[in-house]
Image (cartoon, rainbow, N blue to C red; front, side):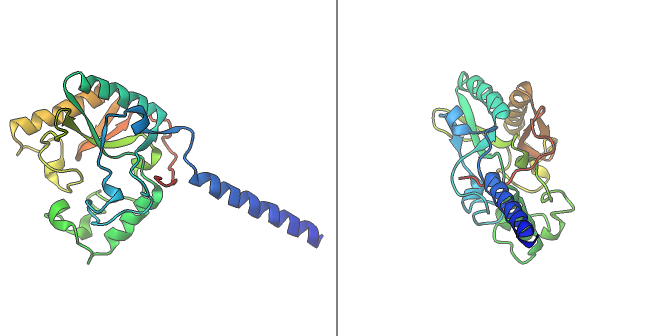
Length: 227
């Protein structure tokens, strides 16, 4: 009996370890977006230190942009349309590991850590980040069909003026923010129109953030590393 129990325990442990190993692999339902769109620009902020933490984020081990195949297909159509007009996309983030979200939560709870406050949240008290929705327990990015991006000019790779930088916490990043120039409003409108045309939906608080409406994993959150 004892040998039988020990055998079963060994089997269960093996299955558990195998399951953990599988979860670390990149699912077949995801693609490296750069392979689908070779001429897109990448500024993967969480791989480096130019972000609201001021340091690299857990789970971002390489400058790669992963996204579901369905979202990638839509992004290819968007890039093709923009290219025909002399523009293209620059991606700041797409798939985000759950460990990165956990890293955000831990950072938000450390009230004294305000290294990047001046650039990213100058008018927001860090203690309010959860209440205001800037930091959450879960992120749609971890489901694989959400992307943060902007539009660039193809000739010199400069970003269109959107009124704020990526990941600016505050009302100026909202779509309905009134104190924008006509050019900034038009640029945001161009981005939103083309993303919605190809099946993405916006959130009102962040001009750069879009999620595929028919995302394949509506309730599943992934945690494989970006590598």
